[in-house]
Image (cartoon, rainbow, N blue to C red; front, side, top):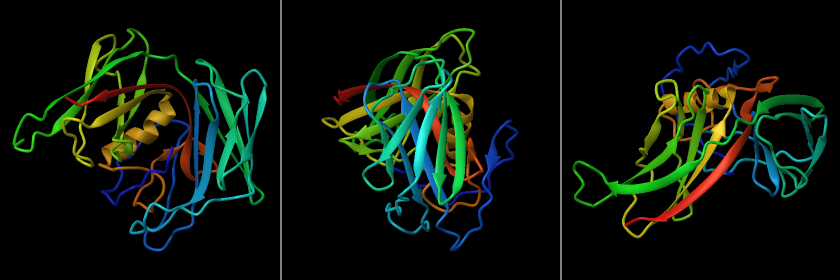
Length: 264
């Protein structure tokens, strides 16, 4: 997945989530901070961990790759999966796919410094469908909005992240939700965004991720900030990370489901 970009926004509200750290970065020219983005899924195929450096907010989405790192992941059964670099800054394992209920721990040695992070993959919650309808007001251009539909399991704490693509272009808006007030209900969640206009005939793809609590905190913090993306750029307050020592980014072990529609 490509890097997202943190926009300059208001100061982050105080978070009281255990085992997370808020990265304290200066503004202005304080760039070149390490960014680690690890995504481990239950889908067969290569798994990726991307390592780069952040850039000024005004720069384009081109982030200097960090090469020559030593990267591996260990599961809670003691199996070790080495990650090989290629292309530059992208570290890949073709020998693993995640299993719900398992915990995965990353170790990355970068310029002699070891960084670690752990994430537990939740159980899969099925994405039933995605639908499109006309925006309700001031819609002379006939723009559409997207809703996802799924059954939240009762009596289980669940957190979700959605990633949207319109005509193969990723929407920069962050979508992260939990079931604190919707436990056990059939959910219709509007993915409200204005970054890309959606019209009849467009192809819309949505990925649903079931994520753990610490990863949810990372994404929901960005969403609350009104951010259109995370870790590539300098921000007044960066989101809490599950990486130690604290740096920009996250490790996320999550289930992944994808559905695509042609908007009518």
